[in-house]
Length: 501
Ligand code: SAH
Image (cartoon, rainbow, N blue to C red):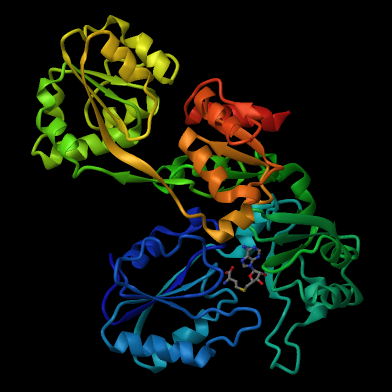
């Protein structure tokens, strides 16, 4: 059910991995009039907010005066009283060291209805991603979530170190880095075994999660040495040693590698998601963007005359999408292609066609124009009308071959690829990259021109195929890896093989 007017939702956004957001949180974010959010929410958590929703940052930032807690409560009350539906989005779980309790009390005092949506708390999520089970049949029958850094305004410590030292189970400290030295010493002084396994987990479930293993006696020094910073959790107990067997994140083939994806933003998500699943840190640095040309006369004419073509060739998923948009604008649909032979340059293009109900008749073994020319050898084109619908800037291999064979060819540019201005933060993040991936010659040319000497020279260059490699060499780059199969799957396979060496 979507967010209701006049209600405040205290929502947990989980520990950082967007995949750990609950279905309820996404539903509420998508429908709320206003979202008040904190700093540690997953990347893209607000992407699903509806257009026109008010997004209000109320988080703390080191060194910047933050919105006082009472004021947050007050603003939530005011927004709800004004008849709006309000999501109060917090990292992890709102009631686990999230001050959700205080905000709920402020809402109750203000007579505002609220709902609490639990989130996956860091104490179980960061640990799970580190391969540490917080309970274990043999090691721990209880787990305690403890704050390692109390409200600095409090004079007396509320922590009973004797009780914590004697606690028969796992201790998970939130906000535990700053005072780790004192806290570990206090636990040991109160009788906890300094030899007990301990671990620190930094940025759990985020890209670049790091875990440091030590003992209670050595964890503070290890954290200092490895420069573990917030947000981080400290785990104390025998379960911390289970990581030796249970660590799984670090075993992913691209763990610890940073990979730059240069595809246009609209197409990058699939490749980026797969790379992330393989353990890579992904920097999205789109070099190009697609500008449709559906208003062009030649496009409109081709769409209107689509039934007259004996052969229709498509060379990219974008081309397929835009051809169908052009058809729709002309009041046509897939049936208009009933009489034509339809050729696709590769599996991505064929898939885009299949999604629209068209099974490609021609699909080459290799996914370059030359191979499509060969694959078309058996198709009768002489004296027939042929449509090649593609990008404005493309090679002439296919048109030349078709004209030579006597086709009455229309080459129609459905879109052009234009240079994308690079995002400064992404350029910075790319400097440490291990790999830069290129899926087309236009991405190579544009990225190397835009970045100039900011191109990450130390990174290995991965190219989707010979045409892209040629463009890379022309731009002064060395191609380290070239895919044997010239599609995104082939590029991934080549990158994985290289990373395994
Ligand atoms: N409500 C949050 C906790 C907020 S307190 C929750 O339920 O997770 C903030 C502390 O949580 C941080 O100092 C850190 O100790 C811990 N934390 C939050 N996100 C974390 C993450 N991704 N990895 C490790 N620790 C995290």
